[in-house]
Amino acid sequence: MRVSRNRPIATTVLAILLALLLTGVVSADCPGTPLVNPNFEDGFSARDVGEIEVANGWYHWFQDGPHQDQGLNHRPEWDAENAQWHGTQRIKEGTWAQKWGKVYSTHRAGIFQQVSVPAGSQVTLTAWAQAWSSTEDDPLVSKGGAYALMVGIDPTGGNDWRSNNIVWSDPNRTLDEWVQLRVSARAQGGTVTVYLRGEAEWPVKHNDAYFDDICLTYVAPTAVPTNTPRPTNTPAPTSESTATPTPEATATATAAPTEVPATLLIAAYEDANGNRRRDNGEPLLAGVSVDIANEAGESLLSYTTDGASEPHALEVPPGLYQVSTSDTPGYHSTSPEAWAVEVESGETLEVGFGKQPVPTATPTETAQPTAAVTTTPVPAAPTAEPTPSQPEEASGRSLMSISGILLAVLALLLPVGLRFFRTRV
Image (tube, rainbow, N blue to C red; front, side):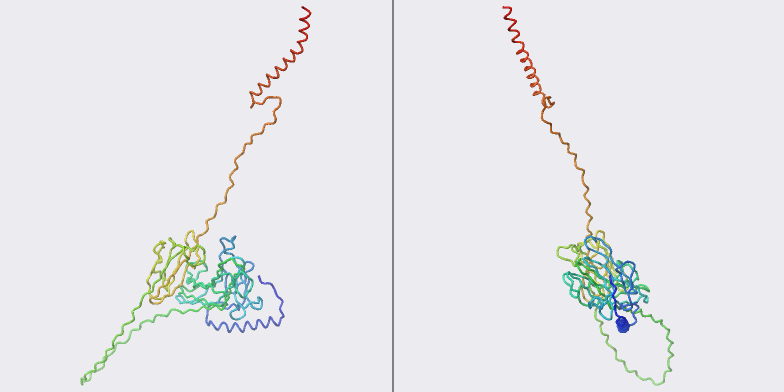
């Protein structure tokens, strides 16, 4: 989030005048572009939630989840990049650039703009971009990170960044250096949508994207002229003298070079580690729907992969094609779901779609009821009373007690008996 700063009035006025002068110079690099604020010199504005400041005329987009508890797919922060404020030099030209990024998390996000163009136009989008992805704090040097930059065109004019209609450029993973991204598509109606896209691949400390100098050009379709009937030639009068015509030289036809078809090799694979390339041990995937369309958007082939016979080979005339796929149950795409590819005569080009398994939610273990433990009470020390568990021992004690009493009685009666016996004698 940007914090307020106090600047001298003269410095502020000078900066504004310099920005206005540079705006005219920069805009001349892409004359006639239908984009609004293509170089981000015409101001920024805060959007619906905090920490989002986007260039005027543009709108932000991002992927929200899943697995945010693991530092993945978070909403980044958008900001106006200005070298005077941040002390960096990630400005391609002029005074401003568009920035977005997030710390300690990955993101897939960017900005887009809908543009009016003549229906059927061939539209080309270019943009300058660079990324900073680092485990350390040096704002000019990346270390230990990975970041992919792309641009895209939706020839139908939609505003869903997940649409399969979008034609994306190849991802560029250059860090700390300005690179120019380019993509081309044919407008299917009177509106197209252009996308700027950044993908932080690892949740390192810093993941930032910077875009500047966006250019959109188009070539309107050529009108087909109407055939106007030509007047019938009136034959000229024939002179009486008959001249022998000179035979005209017959031109020898030159055989046109034979065009060699190109080959597209298309496969879908399980990108288990999510690094957007097929590594050893990552199998081909079955059940992935693939569509190949020509430059005019006409579908040439649609099929579903079987995971065994790929890569599927398709011979096509040299030219521009769009190869796209759709969502696959149980997987999410790690590569763009549509590629714009251009093949030359005799060229073979491989197009791959990476799909990563969606982690299965681990069921929460329900605590099993603990079996009730019946504790047998420990009997107390035996008392004079017999316990039911020892019937024989108790009987023995009872007999001994009775015998003792009888002996005591006999001991008392014995002297009396002896006296009685002696008296009688």
